[in-house]
Amino acid sequence: MSDHNNRGPRSAFARMIVRGFGRWQRRKAMDQLEALDDRQLWDIGLSRNDIPRAVEGLFRDK
Image 1 (tube, rainbow, N blue to C red):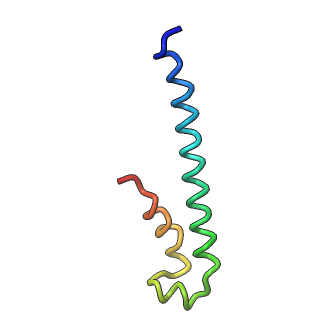
Image 2 (cartoon, rainbow, N blue to C red; image 1 turned 135 degrees about the horizontal axis):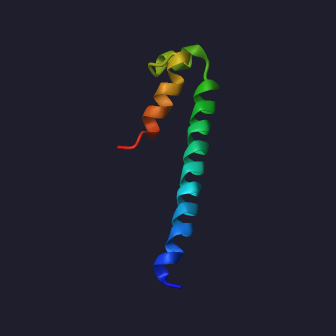
């Protein structure tokens, strides 16, 4: 078996881990922002409705 054949599963596994970690980070950011009261959100320029879009903006691929 060549070295090239062993890369596929490890690469797929690594991508799966990275995606899972990204989802965990997004969820943690959402939870932290949702825990703020409306005044705190206003102080940082967000409304409750802005939270999902703001979090996705933080984690968007550049």
